[in-house]
Image 1 (cartoon, helix red, strand yellow):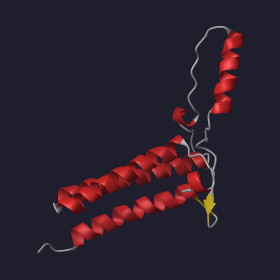
Image 2 (image 1 turned 180 degrees about the vertical axis):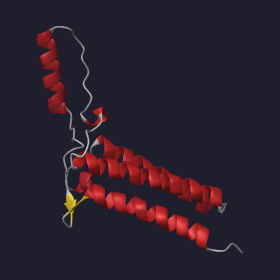
Image 3 (image 1 turned 120 degrees about the vertical axis):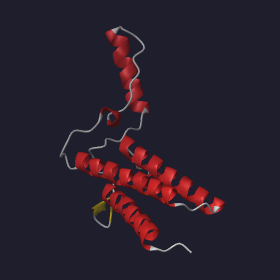
Image 4 (image 1 turned 90 degrees about the horizontal axis):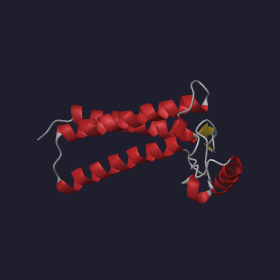
Length: 140
């Protein structure tokens, strides 16, 4: 949302969290459309959502400087020459054209809370909701 509305570039950890969200959405839609609602699928969705919450927790730790960010957060650079002058020109050009957001920088807040915290809350809520729905309702 912030990427398109406010032109804020997401970091690589944000992209990984999106992939997890898309996986959960795709599996959930598949279950709903097929009508094949078994505990194994709900358990799988819970595990995936819990993994998303763990990734968000790691992202929060990176933002708070509790631990170092992974190499994927720094950006990708391609070296095409061994000549130092050409390398500097190439790096300069790549840095100007690449929109990279660092994982250790909080890009935007919603109601005073960083987006990574909201995402962690969403994954945690999804995990708990799916687990409670599946293991507290009786099958007819």
